[in-house]
Length: 264
Image (cartoon, rainbow, N blue to C red; front, side):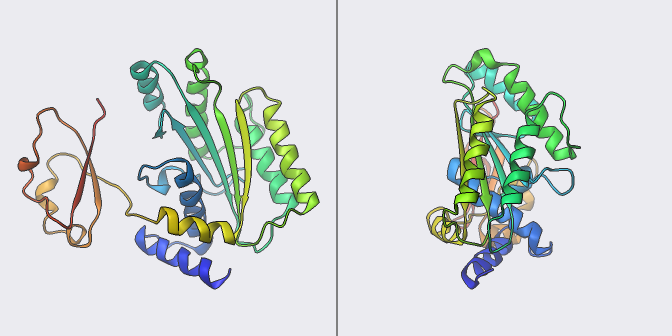
């Protein structure tokens, strides 16, 4: 790993309080943040999309964006379908490798893992996180009449610390992966991006890291003022309540960004 990427990974790990976990796992969170942040402007926690190890078919993270929102459970899909009346969906898959090269075998593994994800009877054993994402996927396709803007989009990102140099063998494998996914008839578009160190280093200055969102239930706010979080700056998210006024929260200060997100 080159010095610049290593430094960016270290800074990201500190910002997201991931420094205590192994480097390969930190890189999965790092790569997932960079790629999904390209598609999703809202703050999110990478723990919600990283799929964990074992039985993942080369898929290190899955993000499902529905009507502009990152959904992490079936209930959110149902709510979007009922409230909005239509579903505009993007599936994002990430494979993260610290290797300084792109590998044909890794692309093949990634291809198989993504294709298997959309099978009614998967060949691969699914982790709990993968299965949760598969349940969301099934709930989405069960509501396909609400695809008023077209079928879902599917975007794959293979991230390494190397350089993509348009190697003909690698490019053939990448193109074949796109063709195989298009052949399923499940998507309006399929993209497969191979992101190297240059892509990582270009993206970070544009998107930044930002704080990890912190979900606070009502009743917790009286404890925040004395917290180092308020001193250091953080993004707090709480359920919105009709007629709620900022004056109800004396802890709101210049160092604290308080964002209200309604589930209504």
